Length: 438
Image (cartoon, rainbow, N blue to C red; front, top):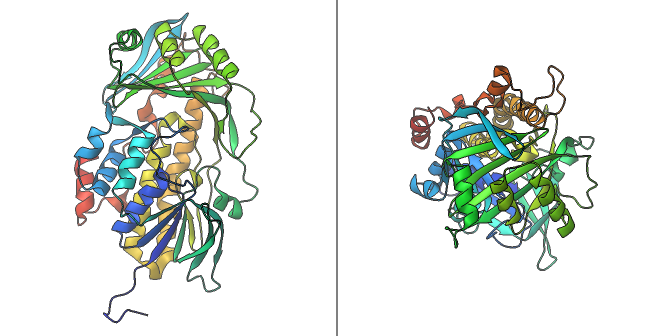
C-alpha cells in the first residue's frame, strides 16, 4: 500500500558482507532509490587489513567509484597510476629480458583498506550494522519479502531484519551460496601466494627502497610481473611509499583448519620463504620481502562458472557469485561492476518486477564473469608453468611471440567493454562513465 503522501515506500535490500563488494552495492542500490542495510560481522570499520593488500582498478571501476563518491579527486589522490603492464623474465637472480610492455594499461593501484575507507565513509552513517553475524534467512511463501536473522556479537542478541531483496556479498566462501548449491566446491589452483606490503613512508631514502627503484625504474606507474621457471611474482607501488608484492608458489593443497583462504604462518615458514626467494628473485626484491613485517599466505582457489546467481529474492554478487584467481585483476573490478549493473536493473524494473530485474542482472553479468574467471585461471596456470590442454608448459627463458601476447592483461575477455545497461544517454551519473571509459 502507498503512504498517506501518495508515495510508495522505498524498497529495501539487505546486504550480507561489508567488504568492497558489499559497500559498492550499498552505493549503487542507494542511488537506485532503495533503502539499504549492510550486515557485517566485523565489529568496527577496518583501519587496516591483515589479509588485504594491494588491488588494481580498471578505468570503468574508477569511473563508477568516482560517481558514487561524488567527485573525481578523492579516488585519484588515494591511488597510484598503473599505466604500464610489463612482463619480464628472471633467470639466475637477474632480470633477463622484457617480454611484453603495454604502456596503455591505465589501471590505478590502491590498498584494500584505503579503497574500503573511501567507499564506507561516503555512505550514510546508519547503513552498515557492524558486529552482526549472519545466521539464516527465509523467503515468505508469496515471495514478497525475505527475513534475515543475525547475531549481535557484542550482546549475543538475535535480531531479525526484513527486506525485499537479500544480496549475498559474503565472499568466495559464501554461506548463502552454499545454501542453494550445497555440492559446489572451490577448485584449488595448484599454488598459493605469499603476499606483503612494505611501508617506507618514514624512511624514503633507505638503501632497500633506493635499490628497488633502480631495479624497477617505473615503480609508481607500472604493474611488474617477474616470471621465473614455474613461478612468478607481482610488484607495484601503493600510495605513501608502500610496495605491494605477491609471490605465487606451486605446492600441494594445504590443509585448512578454519573457514578461510588465508593460512596462519609461523616464523619458520617465513624464514623458509625468504631463503627460497634468494634462489629465485633479484636481490632487490628479496630485500623487500625480508623487510615485510607481516607477510601472509593466501591459498588460491576459484570455481567453475555458475549457471545461476539468483533464486527468488536472493542474489549473489562479487566473489560469492564468481570466485576467481587473481591473475586478471578481476575480483574487485567484477564486484564493482556487479554492484553497478544490479543497481541499474533494480532502478529500471522496480521492486514490483524484481524477478525481471534479477534475470536481467544475471543475463548481463554471467556471460562476462564466466569468461573472465576461466581466462584468469588459464593465465595463472600459464605463468606458473603448469599444464594446459592445448600447449606445452610455458618457460620464460624460451618464450614464443604467441606466449608473450598471451601474458598481457589486455587479452582478458571484455577488457574494455561498457555494458549496454550502463551506456545510458539520459543518466547523469553514467555520462561521467561514457566520457572516461572509452
